[in-house]
Amino acid sequence: MVSKGPLLRLLTAINRRRMKLLVGLACIAYVASVWGNFVNMRSLQENGDQKVESKIEEAVAPLREKIKDLEKRKRNVEHWIGHENFELINHDVVEPLYIEVDQIYHLASPASPPNYMYNPIKTLKTNTIGTLNMLGLAKRVGARLLLASTSEVYGDPEVHPQNEDYWGHVNPIGPRACYDEGKRVAETMCYAYMKQEGVEVRVARIFNTFGPRMHMNDGRVVSNFILQALQGEPLTVYGPGTQTRAFQYVSDLVNGLVALMNSNVSSPVNLGNPEEHTILEFAQLIKKLVGSGSEIQFLSEAQDDPQKRKPDIRKAKLLLGWEPVVPLEEGLNKAIHYFRKELEYQANNQYIPKPKPARMKKGRTRHN
Picture 1 (cartoon, rainbow, N blue to C red):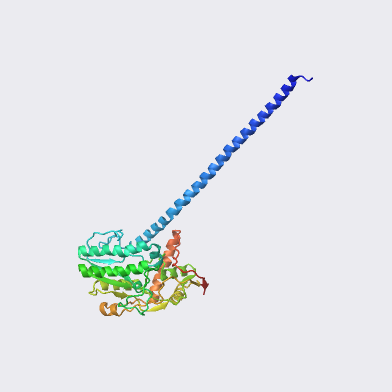
Picture 2 (tube, helix red, strand yellow):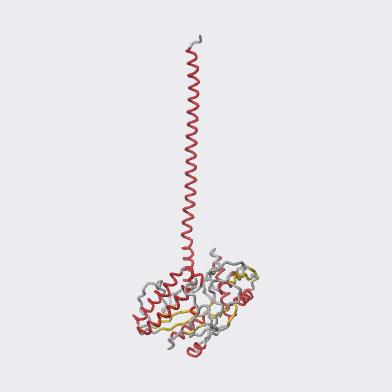
């Protein structure tokens, strides 16, 4: 027989080694687990930080753009700051305004399709509630109010050229309706206040206008074409380019507004340049004036885009003695000079503006 003493001692030694090995493996597994959790937590924290930073950037980016816009608008009027007859008040016309004035030029409203379609409810509020507030102010203080209406009240016209007696051809539920119908009801409000409350009103139906100090991201034809030509990008034409527009220089419009305000004409008056051009002709003209090699890119036609637009200004000539005097190319050269300077300024501030696209139907892109 084999003695049990040595055997037990051998088994005990083996078991001890196993136990030590198991304990060692357990320790290694624990350390690995803790380290893995630490690494995962750190990774989660880093990813979380990145996500938080990304969310913050998403929230702050539009604010940065708004700040740039505010700075841009301030620069538009900075040459008047300090003048004894100038005061700048930051106010939303959707809220009532209490000031003492003799004349009110009610110009509030986004006017380019990308801007007014971006927030149609705000556009409607500005043109309805805002107009009511301005008419209420005019009534309280006995002021005369001039409404900056628009050629868009004629919609996609079936009468050409458009005179003030034409009632228009407007889609009341289309993408442009917030602006078109907003201005139409604003005109209605003006004449309701005139008839019921005796408020003196003037209504200017403004056709396409351009000039220095336009917003670089305005999104309208002139600013888009000039900006694209200066940056060597394709000039985007929506549709075939056969649509016509009539462009007036800003100083002509200002003279027309002042003449209308100080006249005895209470019915609507067209203010625009009757010199009619197709959009394609206009794109080619800007390319030539800029000296750009940009191609012309044709995109799908925007919904409810008017095919013809030309003002009949016989009424303005007869009753106001007004007509545009700045030749188209002269005005465009001034606008191009301004935009070129603005691009230099923006480049120095690491911000390059891009034209805003119009709302489009689906379709293919073709090049000229």
